[in-house]
Length: 395
Image (tube, rainbow, N blue to C red; front, side, top):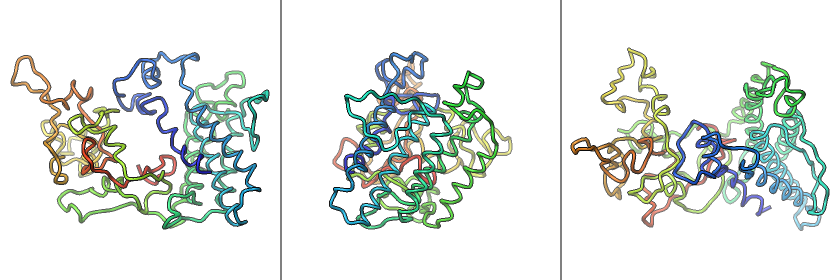
C-alpha cells in the first residue's frame, strides 16, 4: 500500500510540462522537441513517439493494487483495517482507470488479475461505457466503507467524499461533447463505442450534477475564506488556501513534507524558479472586473492603460504580471518583479532577467498555489500539500 500511495500523483507530470502545455491553455518551458507537450502543441506527435507515461504509470499502479488485494488475506491487519484498506485500494484503482479513460477512452479492464511477465496478455479495449460503469461501481463500493473525512494522523487518507467526488468528475467528462455522441470518432465502424458513448444523452449532465450534489450534501467541506489577514487585499484567502496543510476545502490531497516544489517550478528566475509553464494573456482577459462585468462590457470600467485595476481580486493571486505587487508580500522579498520591456533604450530590451522575452515568453508567470513567503534560492519552505485536481471542490 505505501508504494501505491507514494506514486499516487506521479501522473501529474504527464507529457513533461503537464496537459495544459500540451494544448492551448499554457506555454510550456523551453524543452527538447521530443518532450510530449511540445509534440502535442506542434502537431508532431505520432504513434511511434507519443508519450506512454499516462498508460504505463496507470497500469503499473493498477497492478500494484491488484497485488495488494490478492495478498491482503495474509497481511497481519485486523478485520476492520483490512476492510478499510481494501476500499482505499479499490479507490486508487478507480482513480488510475479514470486517468486512462481521460487520455484514451475505453481501455482494457483487467479486474483483479495480476499478470506475470511471461503471460500472454490477450485483452482488448473495453467499451467507453463499460469503463465508466466499472469506475463508478468501484467508487460506490469503496464509499460504503470509508468515512466522510479523516483527522489527525489519518488526514490525507481516502474518504467517502473522495470516492463520490471522483465519481462526479468521471461523469462530468462522460457528459462532455468529447465523449458524448461518439466524440471525434462518431460513425467510425464501432470505434465510437470504444473511445466514447455512441449515443448522445443530455441526461448525462444531470447524472454529473447529481453526483456533485451528493458530495456537497455531505456537509463536510466549505470554501476557504480569509478576509482578515490582509484586509486591504480582498480575495487573499483564494491564495492562502494553497499554502495550508489542513483546511476544509480539500476533499483529497497528496500528503508531503515541508517543501518549495512549486516555487522551484513556477517562480520567476530572480527568485530561483525555472518559470514555466507560463500563462497566456487569454487567461488574464477571462477574469472580469471587480463589479462582475466582463472587460469587454462598455459599462465595466475597464481601462486598457491600467489593465489590472479593479479586476476580480483572484486575478492577482493567479498570475504574476507586469507589476510590483509581490514586493508587498512578506518581509523577505528581494526586489519588485519587473516583467516589462525598457523602451527608454534603443533598441528596447528586457528590463530584467524576469522580463518578457527573457524569463517568460508570454509576459506572465503562474502565482496560484505558490507561497509568496517562500523563495526557491533560500532556506524557506511551506507546509503545503497538493490538492488532487479530480476531487478538489474549487479550482
